Length: 160
Ligand SMILES: [Zn+2]
Ligand SMILES: [Zn+2]
Image (cartoon, rainbow, N blue to C red):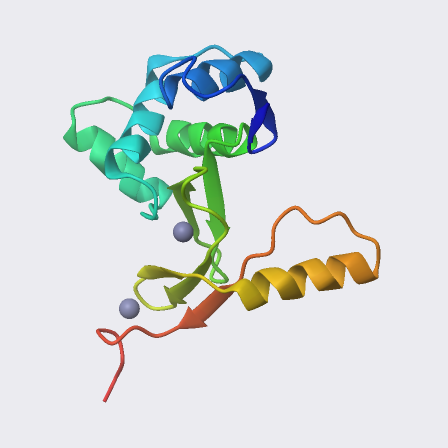
């Protein structure tokens, strides 16, 4: 059995890569697969993993593609897709949120976030993963993930 963010999946190859987990996840969540939810997830799948979008970005893209949907619906849909494990939510310290596709091929990673424009870059660090694991082990917590968000100012936003 493989696992996809906590969902137990049948062996790979028995369904197309994204359709299976989506159907399974939405079924397990007891929710209907509405065209809007499908469209939001499709958007993330089209841009691929490693891209980080705000709810406003998602809303903008769907409106551009002539999908009538409110920002409030986008927020609800994103939250649901996070709960089901299809998206990963990144909380910025300024109260903003970014969403990205969860995927087996894109393992735990960390983020450098520009506090001025929100530009988000990824990096990998075994040490951070290990530090999180050590800390959890030490006090008997069961580790779910250890990711680091680094607040910074990008070159474009830097004042001279
Ligand atoms: Zn990321
Ligand atoms: Zn910036």
